[in-house]
Image (cartoon, rainbow, N blue to C red; front, side):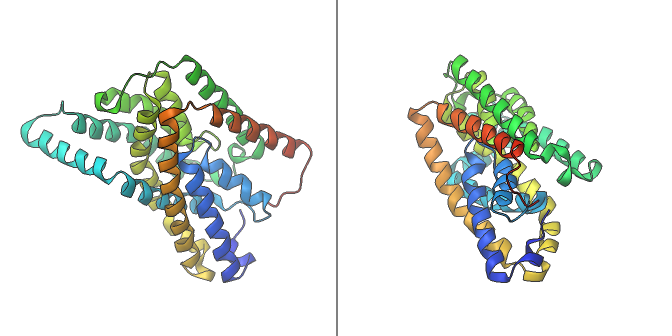
Length: 288
């Protein structure tokens, strides 16, 4: 992993984090894997791998964007849970949605904590290598194609049940593998179980709030230590960039899936994965 603070001045480092934040914001909610792009593109630019900690902290910008975008939904869930607890009305849609999100967060929280404390060298492990990212990207693209081909989209978010949160939550845990894509795997799972595309994306975004927040907070101290030479400004700029781009990415994807299928992202993932294989096989210059 490259220490940005030791290889560039403050202005150059801030520029790099501005770009990294934009990459994070664009790819976090599109089903193409933000982790993969934040690993691959900086290496392609000659910047080196920013690492797990920086990647996780930049996700806090995406978390802030999704909270502001869906604040009405979140307030509705708060009111729904308050009513459910006081009057035992857990069958109401907002209460069921909140419960589904809580249950769906458990698998990725458990898996992430286990990796953090047990897999000490995860940052430099083979699972984050270019060929693995390429293979996973292609595999998940094909799985999304299968889900799109077999889908019978009828289910809406108002009809969600707690078990839906568990099913989608277990698939979300796979997103800890670079190339899987948290939004991609949850969208794929939801399509396989008959969700409408826009509702599947909406639930994916809401489900991601606890996971993204936990990951970012868990890594923020280490990320700040990496930036100690240039202070906190690069991280602030990166997170700010992530907020703006994330908000527009959410808005665009919801509108896109309202009228279109997910074939665009299937094609992109296949091209992305195949390009990485060519890059790796022909030894194109990288700076790890």
